[in-house]
Length: 196
Ligand SMILES: [Mg+2]
Image (cartoon, rainbow, N blue to C red; front, side, top):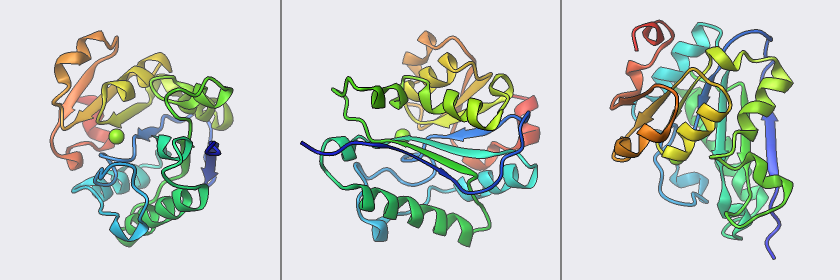
């Protein structure tokens, strides 16, 4: 039986009362190769560092919220999951971008324990970040590549979502917040949020 767990990493102090940029990880920050378990194979997605750096410069907290069911499925262990995460952040830092906090949900899809409260489409990672850091969820946005990302954003009370590689855009009508399809991540920056 694989040992699942949820992990929260705070990288920087986060001041309360501000909105945050929430990011799905695989397929948004880095190229999604499926149950990523080799730190050396990590590649950032085009525009991800540029987008994140723009929010860093505007003092928006940037928070990764990522399902990592490969942990609960036994495809990789906790050390490997953390090594991949460290590698992603090192690559971002190399391009002048950083994340303020990271939430990783290791629950497998059939997990019925409380760990699953963090597994998107459940909103647990977002609401926990809101409670812990005093993030203003109602002014926060999320960038993801799946309908489940948008559902988590809506249930947590975020104001809008951005969907990359939007081949699932037809399914988005079920999500009760505005969802914008984006091709280029660098089109998302704080001032741009006013015009979306
Ligand atoms: Mg994804």
